[in-house]
Length: 204
Image (cartoon, rainbow, N blue to C red; front, side):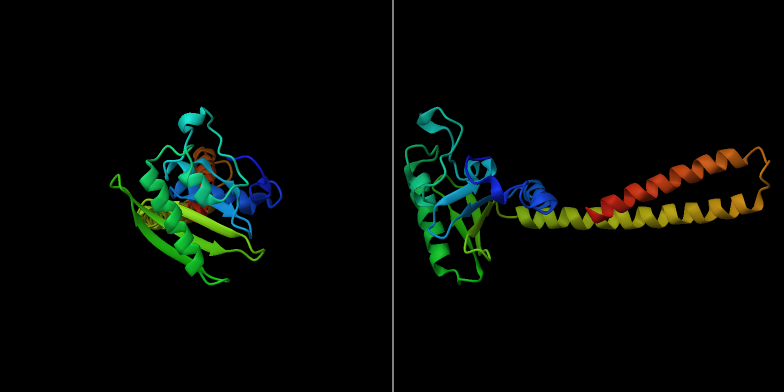
């Protein structure tokens, strides 16, 4: 995480911000925030790494905030070739300039090293701009993974529901002192715990 202004990250906004950041990381998306004047307030490491910005000749792994995005991308601290830094700087500038004040914009960029990146910008209520960068297909892959996880959880929930229903009927038919009852109660408790875990997977 870059230095400065961590208020947009977990802490001030609590679990909602932490959940959002975790989801972006899982989806392979880098994120940064610019203030009203276009200076970088904060950004995660993935945002810089995907654009080839790193330690470079500075020997430091930290990217200085408080500078404009274009300045950072085109500076000598960038690990990417100068042409890629200029391409990215120009692409972000075009994207932000063309974006409605209360809207969002998207742009696909082809770099000189053959890579493709998807850039997106969205205006926040406080006037700041949230930027994201991803490899093409990353968002679709993350959504496909979420859908598969949801389907599997749904099917497992149905199976566990059937198990619990049958266990309930068996326990209802058995007297309290039946030798098998304790074993069925253990199985029933395990099935309840499994259902709880499946529901957590479905909601994640």
